[in-house]
Image (cartoon, rainbow, N blue to C red; front, side, top):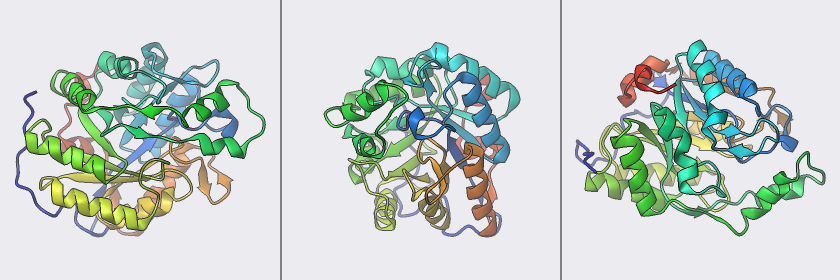
Length: 329
């Protein structure tokens, strides 16, 4: 691997604290994911048309980056079949200039080659990259429902009690080489705890990852850092210590603390991620009507604090992306 990183280690990211003076804030929307299931919300996009519509709506509401998983249109089960991606990728690309970020996470039941198949085929501008193996527990959601639309739903949730999401050091290196060096993608480095930030810093120091670096602090997943301000502050401090000057960070919180911690992340000088992949509600106990509704809410908060939603092209420039003319969809 030949990527290198420029810049000395510092205690500050590119973003300055606060959301004032028209600071550009990148909004990412993760529209469907593989965590929530159709029983949990009728608004969760499942078919290609629904995922495309949700993505286009989110982009119009102010999301510069659309983070994408696919689902089997018949059952709603998580899928990494490129044939399930193609219909909505083409439609989103025709109707928006949003940056497409294809997940390499898939779900914990998928082997690595299956998870990577869509990104390998479509060569997007961005991909997500989980910075380590971990327990990824969604089984507590079994307690919330007694009846399910599909048998696979409780089976998949229960499986997370015994399965580990695997991204070994070897896996991480292979993904960086395959999708980064060979296909030109930049990464949303998803860090669920301090150890994964340490791993990111390790690869930066070794020169396998080049800047600009975009790190996503993920809070609220059982097995990772809980959704608290204290954990967010600790993760930001760790990243400041280990990552090079000029890194960018974003904040997502799974569950009902989504908006509060995204707002805190923006105040701390970062960017934000919302979407039904991470949280199904728009306010306590109230299911969101759409992904666009969540995007509009966080955009309004950012603007009321004095910031501005970064456009896709402004985001491309900030993150040094290869451009939408170099993808394969």
